[in-house]
Image (cartoon, rainbow, N blue to C red; front, side, top):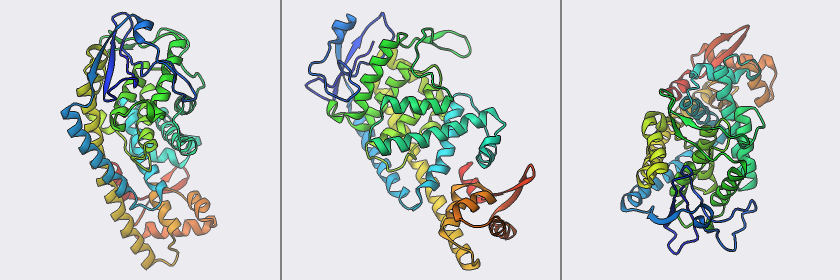
Amino acid sequence: MVGISPFIARPEAIPIIACSIIPTFITLFGNSSCNFEKPKTPISPKRRYGCSEIEKDLETKEILKKLAAAHRALAELKGVATSIPNESILINTLGLQEAKDSSAIENIITTHDDLYKAELNVKEIKSLNAKEVHNYIEALKKGFSLISERKHITNNSIIEIQSLLEKNNAGFRKVPGTSLKNASTGEIIYTPPQDIAEINDLMSNLEIFINDNEFSELDPLIKMAIIHFQFESIHPFYDGNGRTGRIINVLYLVLQDLLNLPILYLSKYIIANKADYYRLLQEVRDKEEWEEWILFMLNAVIETSKDTISVIEKIKDLLIEYKHKIRNDYKFYSQDLLNNLFKHPYTKIEFLEQELGISRITAASYLNKLADDGLLRKEKLGTANYYVNHRLYEILSK
């Protein structure tokens, strides 16, 4: 069992509790409180679990070097994102990409085409995988709304996010028997905590660590790596733990004001380095190898920031091009129209009716004219038409 506590003389040094009886996870600090109240005295993990305590420094030379680069990359991303004035454009387009990639890690595979078609008519989604991915973007947006309102990532918020992902209200695991197995061999790799009281205690403990910065002076990006490890190791739900954990990552960056919008999505990097991701998670559990895990997560932040900046700049350039073209050549130009074409890679007449407050006939004439002139591509879905911003699609699908 691994224990992490901010009740230490040096905040950069984390006590590690080694235990051979119970699988590895973290006790972030003594007692837990759902109201983020600092316990008067920490409960000794040694007393609770009969384990020996050692210290391990998480701010090594290599980590600090990578940390500086990660913060520079994030700051640049935060600035570049402000060049797109309508935040829903980035949340919708990049959020859909993250929903696709994060679900793919769990072998829920869908195409961009299926995903964008599903957005046209949510009630008629036929592909089970497309439904799963749609649930993810719904959960991501809900999470952003909740932290914007509450300024905390609470366990209630985490449960609400997971319930939208899985479309059930099971909450934290109450029945024992959950284990993580090798997909090929069936070998049990890791057994998370089984008792509901222990899961509740650990999640309340994690809740404080996430929300109360007084408990630890560790850099927020190091804390993000710890939080992700902790959440995945507690594995509090029957299903949806990986996707919920990756949503928590980006929400935590917003909570810490490292980003204004939830637009840094690590799933693409994790897919490209999937074997290392699972190996390093397990090496922390088995060997307390924190440095390589934290470096992995910091590198994910750096590389993903660079990729996201590139995508945003391409979207911005295309948006400016379309703005000038439509404003100069069409009498019906409006900022709301432009926003619609970039918020929905696949749009339809009903979207324009709702968002521009115009009649169906007028909306159809706008879209058909843009399609006739090559700015959009007109397609058929059943008996209805939809309109593809094909150049935006090309940017997002690469």
